[in-house]
Image (tube, rainbow, N blue to C red; front, side):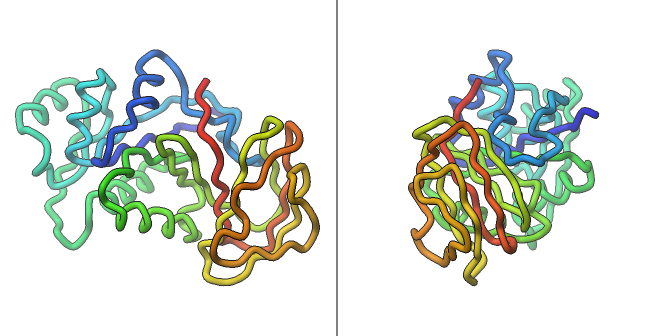
Length: 231
């Protein structure tokens, strides 16, 4: 079964490398997802959602936009009209109680796409970036993946999982839960059973020793952060 994925692009620094890769016919890096994940080996259709002004960057890169969401105060009206004529679904949401990211996530959940990749969040807004990373620890964010300029982050569910790696690849586990998380790690330079990862940098900059890493996590709250590779 094919799973439709969604790339949500925010109005931060445009993810130029990723956009150029997609424009050239490349795919999102499903090979980096933890397994089991139904989209890890899926080649389903990719939908593109722009959060307001991000539509300008996407349009300049020649990227098809399926959804445009927000109050649209950062998108030229001529571009909005042009996108509608090209088949883009425009959701003009004039709601000052919620930011454009929240509006986009609401629509993404209504569309039932999985996973939701978020890019374009880096730049001068440190508060927005920190908010996104903390959001990943929430149960309702288990299908959200942050795709930065050089790294990718996703949350880990409780239980067993594995990731395809290459020897020497940097693998980091970051605790965003506010409470210690116990885990079993194998295939990493720092491995073992019953390892407790608390807040801070205790679990960062580990290194893969093989082509597969196994993890068992006691509870949600750990983020897996790894280098972004496109193919």
